[in-house]
Amino acid sequence: MKHTALYLRVSTEAQADEGYSLAAQAEKLEAYCKMKGIPHHRRYVDGGFSGSNLSRPAMTALIDAIRGGAVERVVVYKLDRLSRSQKDTLYLIEDVFLPHGVDFVSINENIDTGSPYGRAMIGILSAFAQLERENIFLRTRMGMLERVKQGYWPGGGKVPFGYDYDAAQGILVPNRDADTVREIYARFLAGQAPGRIARALGLRYEQLVRQILTRESNTGVIVYKGTRYPGRHQPLIDRQTFDRAQRRLSRPQAPRAAPAAKLLTGLLVCGHCGAKMRYQKWGRAGDKLVCYSRDPSKPHLVHDAHCPNRGVMAREVEAVVRRDLSRLAAQPPASQPAPDGRAACRRALDRAQRKLRRLYELYAEGEDETLREAIEHARQDKARAAQALTQAEQAAQQPDDSARQALLTIGACWEQLTPAERQTLVRACVHQIVLQNDKIEIFYAFDTAPPDPTAAR
Image (cartoon, rainbow, N blue to C red):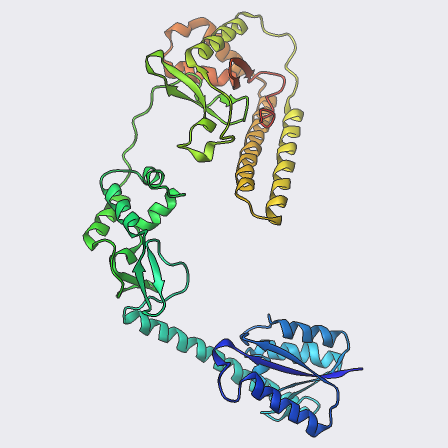
């Protein structure tokens, strides 16, 4: 049996207003049903929901009931209880109520869509309802601006680091992180880089340090809509300190001195976890090749914080690579061209893409910091696989003439080359060097198939 739907709504700020409370609306709607002799009616109540949109639980239930054929009419106390949006009001009447044979009645405006006059009045009155909504928004914005002009914090968004918001006073108050903010400015003006400051103070991101350094609210100022107003909150630093920090932030970075060319830089990969490896000073013994996973100073390069790769002395690996290159240079050129490695590279890229998709699906089901790290590693694997495929395709177009020529140069005049020239020639010949403790694997640019970047993991 169809029923009459009595729709009641109050927004949070109007719950106590006389004539708009749920009890007052219910009383008038029940009286209407009694006067009209409507025996079957049901309440749909949205308490504390704005009328600016239709995302309300009871409204959703009402629309579902109408589409299910269970409602013969909808009755509200006042038109703006249905919606304050002209577009939404017309949508409900034209696209929901009328197509399903449901009449609409607004008691206060004496509207009944069962008559042509009632349908005409809907468009006029809903326009006034939207106008009122826009006026409320305008008054709110003007009130916020006046509040900021008086030095009160506007609210909304995140409270700046180093402060808490005191709702009773309407201002920011320094918290236990205020000293950290002052320490950030002091360290930065003493010459420390933001990344080093973040690590020293236990902050998760370098970007947070930069945000704090550029936040004018730390000087007691409120920036609202691009304009600065004196705030009532206590400044954490003085204006002079802030301006000095801005000048240093905007100063062009001095170019770093070019490091001495290391023979195998950029070619080394850990055979345990797949992370890159780097040269590290190892006292008087020289340089050691170590895995980035064992270097906590660069967390974005860590693949496995417990990587067991203990590293190997650089001179030992360089000697192995040099001897193997000399051996290859002494061999006569192969009579047959090297097979095409593109198919293997495509398979590696496809595996990396599938793995990344699976991780994204798991992350969508439940956000987890470990999954975020795994996704970052998978993205790096995918990028390496794509790069390997590009190199294989280039090699297919220009077989390996440049690599072979570099190999001959190594065999002919290695001793006469500078460190930078030696590095350039080795990079032309070698695709990747995988180190797993004392085990060394060299993959050459003219190999039949480049290594699978995901296999090392």
